[in-house]
Image 1 (cartoon, rainbow, N blue to C red):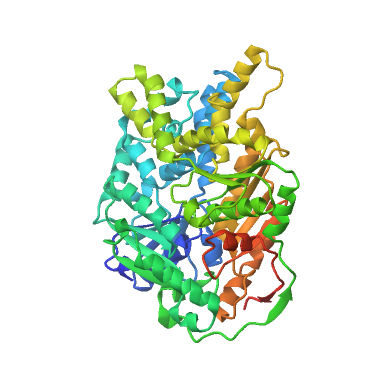
Image 2 (image 1 turned 120 degrees about the vertical axis):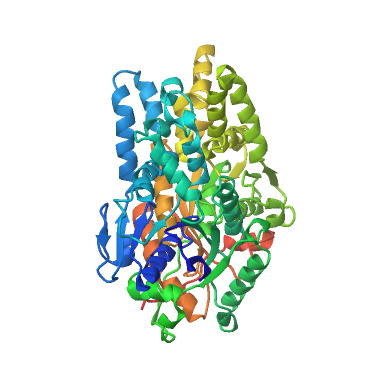
Length: 596
């Protein structure tokens, strides 16, 4: 594997949830340790399962891995770090500032930026403190800080006074005002990240066009701030030998080959490794050794026993319940790469096929609804909100208002803040709000919605909901509905959380649900997309993969979702009205392979 050749001291694995960062980081650490190197494996991923992978407790202390000589591990709990971080910042102002201002500060500090910055605060010493990591040849990090966080740490104005002057601003910069260590340590950490002799970034992806587009953005963002030593690992590639055994496997092989043949321009110059799809869960030392070492994979496993499983709940049943209302807002939410755009189109098509008026809208820059629909359908209208245009409009407005009285340093800080993910979500939501009012007379199906954290920022700052409410109260209007109120009303809005039947995507979806509930929004249903368990296949490899889906589907059914639909992985891309409609067809009973 090229990404391990002449490995530097620091290896960072980064990528979207569910692509295999943890497995690759663990397997790489094992391989380096087997070569006689002293290795420390560090996890800062909120969804990490390093302890489960190695089948032993680890925690927030350097812990030797019993089964692997030369390997130790450390788990930084980012949620605990973020809570301690919030307590340090909010404690001194509680009882001093008005309660609504304190609540606004707490909400600023509840988002992903705080978690990431707090985790960076924790592992900075691993990059800079020679005594702490003395004796280790390599430090392997399961997840890396984003380019946005690193840029913030490079801005001198981010270190003090932000909350004092911007307590009511929706921002990702607030967390930085709590950094208490000396600036020189952070500067040294950022320099270590950018030093190609000391650090290598491994971008982990799947062989899917949408996932590879996400990786391009990460690559460009990190390269722009000097982190240029990057490798691409395409994980979970279907072995070509499976194509002759099963039509679904053959279709996956074709799709993945096309995605890799049309690799985005920004990735073509990177060293690239491919790791094949494994038929087993990557838990335990033998499985991890086999991931990067073909010789350790052993002979082909015998087929497992099969049993008939009752029909899984399907999208058709959800659409039946949605259609019964005659109109309303349907929002599909979830992490990137889970198939929100396709499922939003499928729901809209099925509603329109039933003779109901539907407006389908998206803000996903990678979504091509016109191509997905491949034509028109009576009763269905389609629109797309341009995130870049909306964000630029919002950015100009903020700079012309908040930025008017700032000095050069303060304005630079504000401009950096306006490049954060929260800014785009706020701007896009304001554009979406113009569409929401249509839901009183037709169905509005919305793809790519803001997170609960962003909605709470809007609510806490008065940027939208509270501002409208205040103005309406002053005007004497007795009855009014703001977009936030509509989202919180289960009679008007149905939120569908989309995920995959894999450990990390389910954990991320559960956190999204918690986030929404804090905002007073109760998700109506979950959709588990691209399920092998709901698909027909004859491949032993796919059957074994399907068997490992059942614990995740059961976890969603029993612990997370009030309603559930499972959508099968399709042999052909769901493009065109007919194939989109097929996604909402009832699931047949499927034979289930028991895990070996």
